[in-house]
Image (cartoon, rainbow, N blue to C red):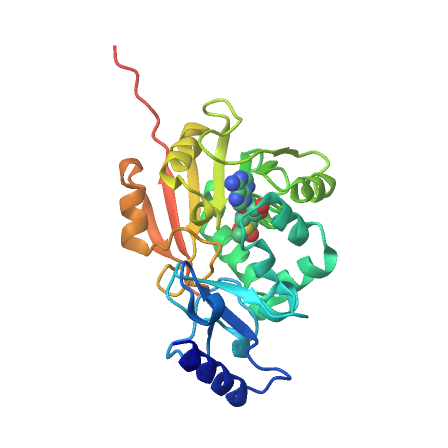
Length: 289
Ligand SMILES: C[S@@+](CC[C@H](N)C(=O)[O-])C[C@H]1O[C@@H](n2cnc3c(N)ncnc32)[C@H](O)[C@@H]1O
């Protein structure tokens, strides 16, 4: 077996241009081929991700069955240059995100990836929710990063009150400096959110739930902190095409609707980025006499 694996490795090396080629090996979790590594040939897979998730350049994609492989770097490779800057967050740690949100070069690369897709996504989200946001609305972004979504909302509705939460200290620091009148807190989203019930008119949680162990518990928290008559807006990548190894959940429209079913969401696909948006109108409870 070792001999065959070695031959495969040599073939992989021979067929790749080592200057720019796919220098990505994958490790089958728990497996032991080639000392724990399977060489993955460039173009060995027959589909390309079409989603908006963060990937490196096309010739560096690693297309492998979800959750079965982990990308590892060869000597001299760096995640942010060889895999795409988003990969520095693959471990889902606050420190990993600090390396994105607190480093201007990485942040700039992240914003420019895939033809500025993050900016397009931000605009598409705000296009959908703008009608729900009034001047003076209190808006909170759960997993806010450096506040790009809040910035777009404020660009369109200057008088909104902006709040945000993230576990990355750097994200909170940058967002707080950007919005001196805003309220930003560092908090690990797990089961509860550090807000009292019915605190906000608009509760946003975009490209975050797929990173979490208990998305449904967190969804219930999003609804709890939203005022009756307000909206909760959840956005996730398209699970059919998303291959990012830092994600635990891969929803499509149907499965996202099922996960949020008890709050009767309206689920749609954003027209250009193809991410999935769920809007929950939080009910005004009618007092019973
Ligand atoms: C993919 S980014 C999305 C950022 C932003 N919402 C957007 O749409 O551009 C995920 C964000 O969630 C934060 N995050 C991930 N897991 C978290 C957790 N368990 N607790 C708090 N924040 C978390 C990250 O720091 C990061 O800012």
